[in-house]
Image (tube, rainbow, N blue to C red; front, side, top):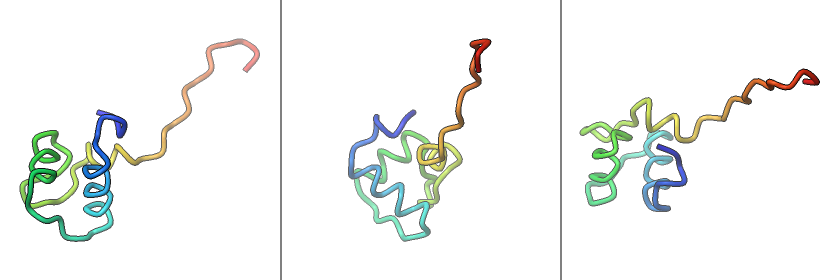
Length: 65
């Protein structure tokens, strides 16, 4: 899943969780848990962290690269 598929509230909550801030209970937290972005304890998963990870450049297949 990409960040584009997350609502602004979900992105903000996920960023806060990655920063180590407490995540309050609510529908947004439940939605992130359902998408495997947060654990039941409110900790970000690898999938959640990957949403904001820098994108790796793809290898160029052209001979001129």
